[in-house]
Image (cartoon, rainbow, N blue to C red; front, side, top):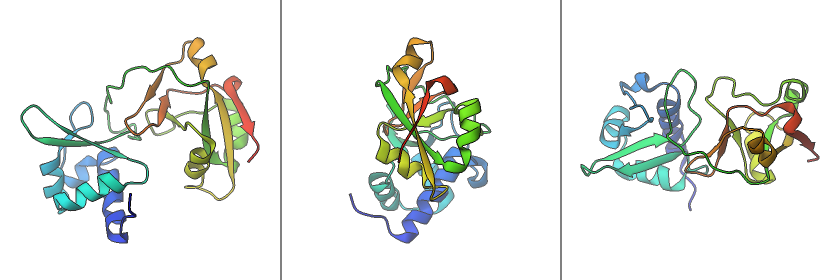
Length: 186
């Protein structure tokens, strides 16, 4: 996997914003599951298919999924991370989680998380990582000082919480109550 050029990183961010948060800014309408025809996205953003293919193949977080439909057209969607204002059903089946998952966050959020647990805020789900290094990387997107929580995922599932796993391996759940969280030393 190669790194994207600065220009393709910029385009990738634009695609992410359009598919996750504001499709109307590009004149697009997502279907109920968050998909849009690739041809429409390319036209709306002035991107070539080769550029899109490179972005999808080399995105560091596999943010996008492309699928070919029965009519031989390609469709694209964001794998997860849609804001609440974009109503989509990712149609992901419930999945049994591993024993533990992890969540990286700016250390400034510690007090509220210890009181209230993890909440999706403006998104549809809480995003969880399968390992500590990924959780640290995710937390560092917003701050250099990062805290990592271990989530007792199996215990949560046994208590009735539902988990889903997106195409790119991110674990999703509605909320994580504080009783299922343990702060990990980093």
